Amino acid sequence: MPHDHPHGHGHAHDHHDHGHDHGHHHLHDHPPGRGHNHAHGADPFHSHLVPEDEAADLQVLATQFIDGFVQAADKSAYLRLAGVPFERPGAGGATALKLVDVELKTEWQVGTAAPSFGAAELSYLPFPGAMVRERTNMALVYVSMREKSLLDIRDFLSARKQEFDR
Image (cartoon, rainbow, N blue to C red; front, side, top):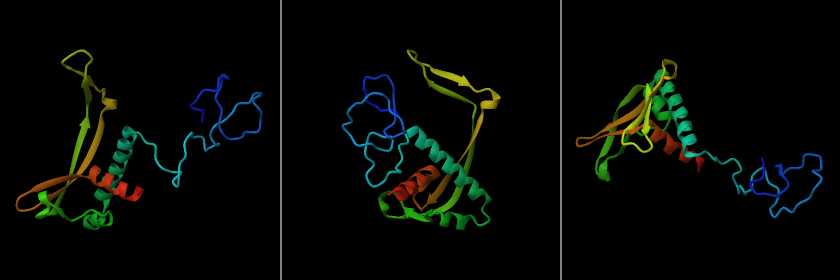
């Protein structure tokens, strides 16, 4: 990993010894590390994912979860093993919502639209056939006498992942 601070000698190098001299010397005001310029504390394996990478990682996890659910012979057991609650508090916590359905929704992204610089219209880019992507998502459907609530599986998995990361 290159340094993230200048030394004024025109090249980057690692903090670890790699068996040869560069022919110059300079002071390091920090201890050699594992290629990073910060301490890791007790957990050297923590994640540095940016939000986009975390979202992509979560989508992969959700896809695997959905595939497993679809293939499971006992769908209720699969959900229980994953820690999906069959009851959860409703709005205000007064009533318990009951899990009654698992909803699968498949969508195909056929293009993209984004704000256009200096224009009030969206910039639209339709995808050629080879770029069209299928996405399947899952929602857990909870109901009570007064309320219906959908829990996106990505929200559930994100919460579970945070529990494991602690």
